[in-house]
Image (tube, rainbow over all chains, first blue to last red; front, side):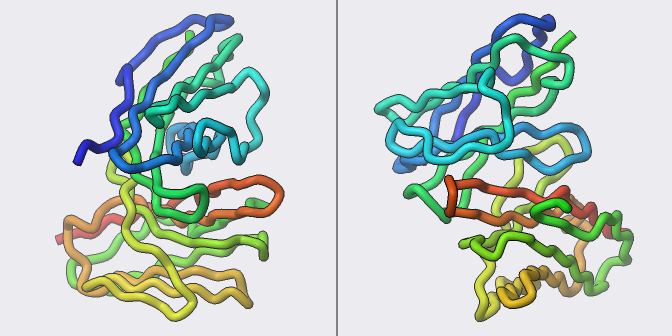
Length: 113
Length: 111
């Protein structure tokens, strides 16, 4: 069984740039969700995709957008990067649209300078 | 008020101690509940789901009280390897699906 994989593991960007983070879901999972985790805080829900459609969103501005592909892999795109976007970005996959336990990838650490 | 609140911690306990973590949630429409464990600089990992009937997995016992909107985790006979941050997680399905994490409670188990 292949777990959740994320790429890249680390990334440094400049304020104002755009970034794309990628995630491959665990085999058999059709739900993917993304989280932002600042140092010392719990993960903050960005959004969830189920069967290629967004079915839930947290309190993040529209410059945070995503996609889920037919093979259930996913992308998180962030436009117009701000210094406060520096964080660990976690992807998680699960079975079904709601209420299933999450299986997390190792995360992408984004630094915005 | 935060949607999910946990004990701020950290908790420092000796090996063999029993430790209890508390968590409250504000939205009565919340549908499912979990405890996750996160080691330093690692991803969160599912510890256990939480049910109203209570559930136990070895040294770990979780309980949900829907009337009080309260979730608990009890760890008996603490081991050094239990040192981690414990995250309370609530799924809310009305008005758009959301997964809400608490800020986490850090546990240090000492020899």
